[in-house]
Length: 272
Image (cartoon, rainbow, N blue to C red):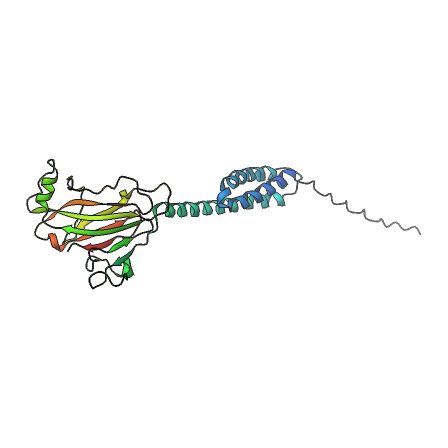
C-alpha cells in the first residue's frame, strides 16, 4: 500500500535585514556628540553633532526593511547628550560668573581690643559671626572679598561746613540733616592682568531706624573724593572720601554698610 502522507514544506529561511547605514552613522555621530558635550572646551562640537545625530536617527527609523535598533539607540543618546551638554554649559557659565565677579564670601580682620596692634596679630572671623547692625565691626577693620580689600579709615560727623567749602556747587543739607565724611581705602587683590574698577565696592549709611542712604541720594562732591572709576591693578589702592547726608539727631547712632564687590556679602561697620 502506497504511503500518501505528505511531508510539510520547510519554513522559508529567515532573511536578514540589510544594514541600516544611516542608523549606524546616526549612532556614531550621537556617541561623538555625547563625548564632546561632556568636555567644557569642546561643547560647541557636541552641540553641532547632537542635532545632526537626532535628525539622522529619525530618518533612519522610517527606512523600510532596515534594522531599527541603531536608530533607536542613536535617538536616545542624542537626547541624553543634549541634556548633559546643557548641564555642562550651565556649570561653565556659573563658574565664569563666579570668577568674573568674585566669591560671595566676605572675611573681616578687625583690630585687636588693645591699641589695634598685637605684635602684628589680628583676629580673623567669618562675616556671618559679626558685622551685623547690632554688632558692627570697628573702624579700621579690614574687609576682604576675593578681589577687593576695603578699610574704613575714619568717619567725620558734622562735616557740613567742610563739604560746602570743598565745592561751591554743593547744596546745603535738608533741614534736620547734616553731611558726614567717610574716608575709606579700596585695594585690588585680584589677579586679573587687566585690572578692575572698584565701581561695585559700595559704602552706605544705615540710619538708626533702618533707612539706607548713600552719596548718590544727594549729589555732592567730597573735598577729597575717592575715585572708583579708574582701573586698579593688583595691590593698587584708591583712597578718598564720600559725603553722605544723614539725620543730625541720630548721626552717631547709625552704621556703615560695606559691600566689597559685586555678589559679595554685606557687613556693617560702626561710625564711631
